[in-house]
Image (cartoon, rainbow over all chains, first blue to last red; front, side, top):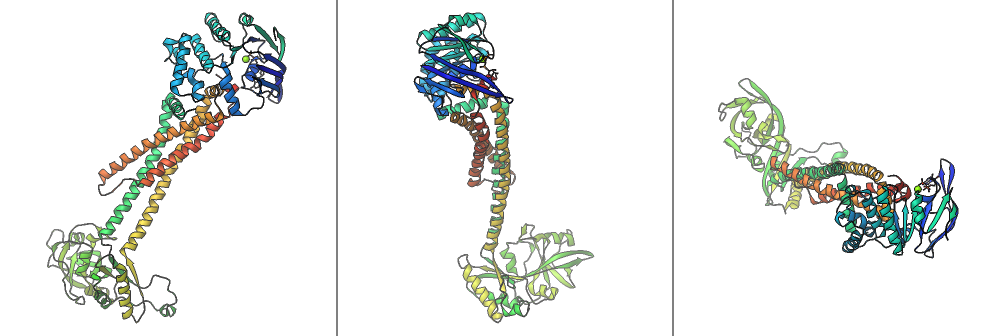
Length: 224
Length: 402
Ligand SMILES: Nc1ncnc2c1ncn2[C@@H]1O[C@H](COP(=O)(O)OP(=O)(O)OP(=O)(O)O)[C@@H](O)[C@H]1O
Ligand SMILES: [Mg+2]
């Protein structure tokens, strides 16, 4: 369902060209569980951002669900992100003045879903994510693990086909990190494609397919 | 994104930084209040003056010697002849019409008034009793000018209350003699202490019979003639009658200028209206200043919220969404600020009306509408730049900073 062919991405930094993605080709099937590892600055986040339609490659083609998305307009990209992709970040990125419920509902609000339907859908998620007694709390009243749960609930509320997590445990202690990974794996078992970028080999090893990125290239790929 | 959600988002964002929001609301509301208050006062002053004029009788016609229009091609101007004087006979002639209610001839000049060593320069007004009636001047003590033929130069006078005090102190004045110019004249009345009328302070006047004034000033002409018509509807016919009568007497020369009270009124009305507009315009500048403040603060707030804006994009928000969210925030600010400003302005207008009850300070509807429109307009225009900047933010960079 995700098909990257010959993707290049360069950044111009102070007149110099930095090649963050160097002729990368990668195909990920529906429902796969994939981890991306590699040294710092190797291009893991860049790869994830391109997959998540937050970044556009300089060359190469990317098709998502059979549709070429390399040259879509802003509104079309936004619609694709909204419907097909769920992002989970290292720093949670919750809106501090919103409650847990409101943060979870943010994608639905942007998509124009009426508040009643939003409440129904967020309520179900909040319960199944064990946040039942935290629904009206603000992010600064939650633990790191709880915050990441809220962020994951927000990522999946639109039932996207693909979950992209960039170092989701990077800001968590070991035990709550493990809980988060278990939660993500549960979602993957439910059928959603899961791509995790991580520095932690233990977490990376759990994935069904492991990809290693070095200097903007795929150094190894356990599957595909 | 639904409109209600956009509003809610804007409100929560405004609520998250109370001090900043309060300052912007203050700036906006002061601007709106200034427009509302100043136009209210300007308009009140206009109504007040118009009202005062109307009280003088709008069916009053003033006849002035000489033409004011550029009628350069009359024989008289060609040979450089000065216009003929208006005379008492002219004034009497205008009276002979059923359109005329009363006529007052007028002569003015400055003379020394002397009584027992006290001396003072006073404006002297030569006229008839009708003048006092036309201008609603009341007699406090004694009598008005005698009702008799206008050409009798009886040496009597009516003193303004201030002149009376300065010449007589607290002593009785009725029947006493004062010297006016070179002539002695007897005081027959004292005016009541009340207001100003059309430029002169009636308290400082000395009023004498018109023929006596002509003698004092050594002239046979008149300064002007006041003609009061029976009603407002026949004013145009009255004007024609006056011009015709005087032209007849002046060998066919239409050598007078006619001013009607309503044309003076119209001129004043126009001047005061444009003054009100000017003041409103100046006040509106403060609204634009408030708009610039909003722009600056929004630029700051966008910089502070880059991560949030990037997040909205990553979660499926379009550039249009981001634009709308921020513009809506600014419009909320200007709406709330505008409403506060209206309340403030109306409260101020009410307060001023308490101090000056004769002034109607209620701001005109157009000013209220214009103030709100300018407030919303500046909110909109000055939010476009920050909103556009936010909409163009690169979500990756926005999210990378935390
Ligand atoms: N917006 C950008 N502007 C310039 N250079 C960039 C930008 N984003 C990434 N890069 C460069 O591209 C390269 C890959 O960056 P990327 O963030 O993908 O690395 P990474 O593998 O995620 O690193 P880390 O493990 O530290 O997160 C780096 O050399 C980085 O400096
Ligand atoms: Mg990274």
